[in-house]
Length: 62
Ligand code: SF4
Ligand code: SF4
Image 1: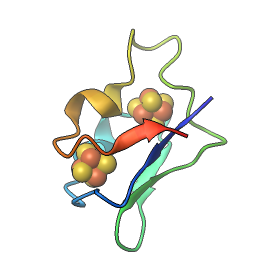
Image 2 (image 1 turned 135 degrees about the horizontal axis):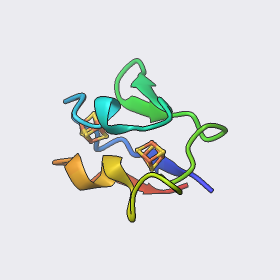
Image 3 (image 1 turned 120 degrees about the vertical axis):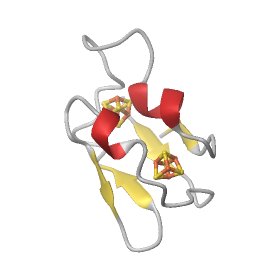
Image 4 (image 1 turned 90 degrees about the horizontal axis):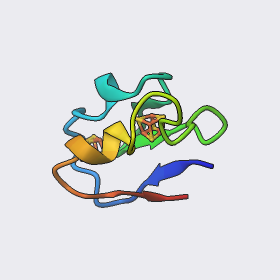
């Protein structure tokens, strides 16, 4: 149960601070989600917080 960030990521960093479990970090060219940490915001929000703020709409189901 995790999301992942696609190559469309513009490296804007908007999603990083929104993650309640700190699953998002800067990779080399794109931001990345640690799939062993992401809970899809279960227990924190009704929908994934990172998806809500991503201007590139590049966060998808893993
Ligand atoms: S879905 Fe929620 S827990 Fe998973 S990476 Fe996005 S903000 Fe973090
Ligand atoms: S909000 Fe979207 S475009 Fe911005 S760093 Fe996160 S995944 Fe990449």
